[in-house]
Length: 254
Ligand code: NAP
Image: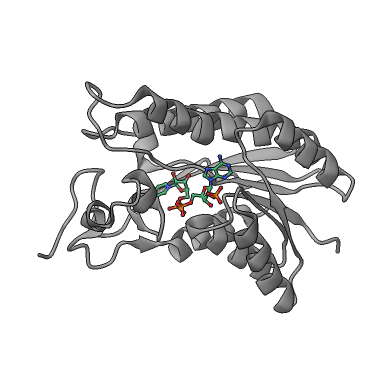
């Protein structure tokens, strides 16, 4: 059987790196992309040393020309079967009244346009594979808002709409569209990036939550969803820690 290829954006940390490890363990050839070349190269080496097929390709998903060049180069190596649109994140937690429009722009460009760029560029290859999967890693922020979340919530709603629309448009082709919407996931960088390196604010996000989700939990969910038989489409899967019942209802123990 030919080995299936999975492209993971944002594979340099957190959920993307964990997903790369789990998809490689599940037998995929993994293509790791992110801006930080050193990290994805180290991860590709780690996976190759463990007997898996893994390559690193530095890429900024907001750079359309670079995304097209990536897709052209990848296309010469055979079809892509799975695309994990994971690159993204939040910037700031300011109210709408005072938020920096530049933060909103960056979040939209990364979470929505980045997903659009890579999906458009790889769609011919995913279709040609005869059994393609586009996965959009959105968030529970894609489904409901919260105070201070406006820019991130708007961007993730955009990613959600992209996934919903694409599923309608691809109906009848051999490509399925899966959306995974996680709640609180304790990753090393997500909150630190959001609060621009302020470790106190970043730590407060998870304070008192005994068991937040970890990157491995979401990687497990993603790997399960993309390894279902081809005719099974997990449209939208919301996954939260037990201690979180909504974006704002979180049980904290101290
Ligand atoms: P993370 O560790 O900060 O990962 C974000 C990844 O996106 C990094 O690998 C980063 O790599 C990449 N990235 C950012 N901008 C990029 C760009 N312009 N081009 C290419 N790659 C870019 O955070 P995470 O927690 O694993 O989050 C991963 C995804 O899950 C994000 O879309 C996030 O919004 C979503 N999510 C997270 C949570 C949570 O609570 N952690 C909950 C729901 C959804 P480089 O900096 O190397 O480019």
